[in-house]
Structures are given as C-alpha cells and as structure tokens.
Image (cartoon, rainbow over all chains, first blue to last red; front, side, top):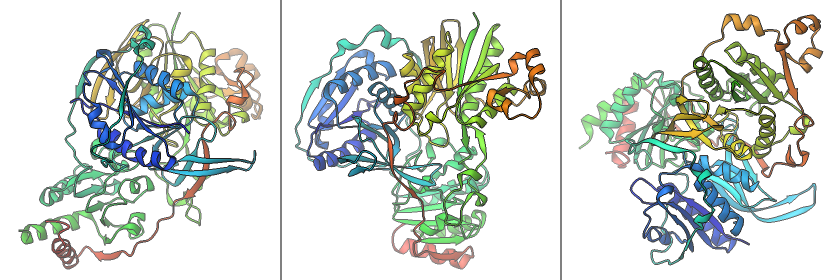
Length: 339
Length: 290
C-alpha cells in the first residue's frame, strides 16, 4: 500500500498552520494503522528549516517547494506541483485543510486526478467494504464521515476504486498531538520545472491579512448564540456575560447568516470545532451541523424558551427561559460571588 | 462579439430551516416537503454577472443549470432578474453524479457555449456545502479559477480584477479571461424581479414543459423565439456515459445515518433567580468558571 500525504499550509509568519499539524496528527495514526509512511507537502517561499516543525508529528518525508513565486498561495502553481507529485507517487490517502486554501486547491487536484474528494469531514476511519453488485471486497478504505443535507444526516463516504482517497477537514476537528519530539524524516525537493508561465496568470494585486481577533478554538468557556437570540443588539448580552466570565463568544450558522455576529465566530461543521470546559448555548436549536462542532464540550448549558429544542438533549443543564432574563441573573450572581 | 457570461446555478432543497412539517414521524427529514429554491450564493453570482452587464455595452448573461425538469424554474427566475436566457442539462443518466461527474457534465455544456468570457457560480450549494463543483469545472475547462469573490473591481474584454473574501482577510487578484469565478455570500444580494421582464419571460418554457402545457404556444413561440429554453441531454453533450452518474462518481455513499439525538441526563431549570443562583454556585465550586 502507498503512503498518506498531507498538504501543509504556511502562515504569514512562516510557520505550519495549526490545521495542517492537526491533520498530520490524525494522519500519523491512520498511517500506523495501515502500516504506511506519512509524507508532508510544503509549498511556499523562505522555508529554510521548516521540516523541523514537521518531524515531531511523525512525518517520514517532507516534499518541499521553496520559491519566491509560491507565496502567497495562488491556485495554479500549487495545483500543478501537487498533481505532478501525486502522479509520480500515487498516494493512498491525501488530506487537506478545509480552509480558504484547501477548499480552493483540493477540488482542482481531485478533478485532474479523477479521484473522489469529500469535503468537511468530521471523522476519518479505516474500514472495509464489500460491494454486492460486483462481489468485490475492499480492505482498509478511508471512511470519510461528514454531516450532509443541512446536517440532518451523517454520511460515510468511500472511494473504493480511485486513488488518492482525498478529504478535507476543518480546523479544530482533529487534535494536534506531538508524536515523537525526536522523530526524524527526510526532505525531498519538488520538481519546479513543471511550472510554466500559464500557472501565473492570476496575480495578487493587493492583500490584507488580519490576525483573527477571535480565539474561540482555545477558549475554556464559550457563550454561543443562535437565531433565537433575535438580533444583533441582543448579542450584546452574550458579550457581557463572556466578559465577566473571561469567555469567548461563539455563534451558530443561523446567527451568522442572520447577520447577528461575524463569520469568524461560527461554530459547527462549516465553522470552528471547539472543546471547552463549559459551553453556554443561548437560543441555539442545535442542528447536527452545529452539534458536530461543540458536542465534545465538557459541560453544556442550554438556555432556550423551547423545552423541545434538540440541543437540550445533549445539555447537562437546560434552562427554560429567555436570554434577556437569564443572562443578567448569571452576570449578577457571578459578580457578587466570584473572587 | 458580445461579452458572454455563463452563470452556473442550482435548484436546491431549502435545508436551512427544516421546520416541523418537514420532519417525518421517525424524526428523519422528509425531503419532498422542503421547498425548492435558487441556491443562495448562486443568486449572489447572478448579481455580479448582471452588474457587469449593466456596465458593458454588449454583454449576454446566460444561466446553465443541471437537474430535473422542474429546475427550469430557476432559469426563468434568473431571466426575471435580468439574465438573457438559459440552458437546462437534464437526463436520467446524470442521476447519482457526485461533484466530479457533475463538473464533467457542466464543463461539456459550457464548452457548447464557447466563446465565453466568464463562468460564474456560487461558492457552494446549501444541500451539499462541498464548494467543489466550481474549481472542478474550471480544471475540466482548463481555465484559471478565482474562488470566494466578493466584488468585481474591474473588467475588460481580456481581463478581470476581483476582490476575494478569505477566512482571515481579503485579496484583490487579476486574471486573464476566460476564468471561472465562485462567489461568496458576502457579495451583494441579488436584485429583485423586474415587472417588465416578468411579463416578457413568463411563458418561457423548455421543450418538456411545452409538451405538458394544455395551451398551444406555437404561434407565440414563432413570434418570440427567445421564449424557448434549451434542454440538453447526455447525447446533446456528446458525453461519455461512463463518466456520468453513479459509474462516473468515484465517491460512494457507504452508509447514511439519520441523526438521532442521544438524550443526556439533563437537569431542567427555570429562569428563576434561585435556579440560576444554584447553577452558578455549582459551576463556581467545581471551578468550571471563576
């Protein structure tokens, strides 16, 4: 069996993006299960020594393309390099972050490779498959598991015949774990001669990158609001509670779509995945897509006027009431009683 | 030669607000009960296309959609808002297509519309949220792609400048034409229907729709040939059937599970001051907060 490849993204300060390290952590486990090697792809510029950031995650080989034309990311040169590499190496599995870059790049590559691609997986597992129609048994496929149809179903997708088996995963879904701090792999330079002028027809004219103001992913306590919060103004109550608790404010997709709060705060399958000590869900009904991003919270409090809101069923505490009543009472008690 | 923009659009079930009437007794979703709508981000794409048409002396905006016969509804909807015409790709042989097979079919249809300058679509459709068909179609057409467009800054016969909305910032990029663009929901909302266009196009039909009409449209259509919406099958596209439908789709659905909420042992509280105080006291003493 061939190896597992992870496309690694480079941040503005030339470090490997968290989402890529999370993918490597998961991919190392999959590689062990399949008894294959883990290979990383890094494409950018001024990347001297970057492999040192990768080896502790159990990377056996780093494919490196270091050229001033390759950062910031544009689609075509990165696609050309990865497609060329995949044609040569024929990976078993290839993983990408479900980011602005990964969701732009992976489909272009999958189309060229004519292979299957599953977006926004919430879980990746190894398993077998028996195809009744052809009476064929497939061993050790990648199960690509994701919510579908607005989060109302969970689908397990497989690619029995085509390689690589490709998937994208959102930031925060997998856990970043050092595999072995002393792990050593090799570095191999990618073949840049495959690039042509045609790969550079899209030029970046202007670029403004902001450090995210929001750090929900690592927050210990999250106060999250849904459509039931009712308005942008009402969200202020959530910010007030978050401020006294030292918490971060999150939101469901419905609240983001309604314009109550900025997209960076979206929690769920198409947002961020979080695992705080405490998750306070305010006026969130609890679609599976949202739940997929927060159900591993240690404790969940649901505040909802609807006693039958689905989220109440996974909550440790359900408060039946409106946020305009409940949140001020929580703030008041906390201010009076915390040290 | 007029500047031609092909808008890719999809009719989708409205999965955003699955109400109680759309739930079956066993707690699963009754898909048939969900209203069929114009995919939201495809409307943003249509608006950006129409803005280019507003500015250019000679520009044609055509809508291309793939789906069952009823998907012709969104072609008319687009024409009521300013599109010049549309094409429906429809054939049972497309059933079960994943994004790769879909982009193959769409790319063949776009090639039939050559010469074109722009292919523009929503970033993703709300029934799948994959965001794959845009880039995959671009690859099959062998043209560059610009994803997550928020605005068109400038456009000429040979190039386009686009503002992109990224997770952590914005980017302005310039590309030669033709190019495929996918549009982010932060782009301007689509204009409303125009009364005059509604009157002009309300009788626009595909061949299949005409066959099901009781009224005879022959005379009207000879006077106004633009009312005829084209329908393309696998044969019209000269498609390789092995690359379509289930056989052309490398991804297979192994298992579908309906989501059933596993009930936790949840403590139910009221919003009274005493209940809230007791909860906060518990959270503080167990150091979950504070």
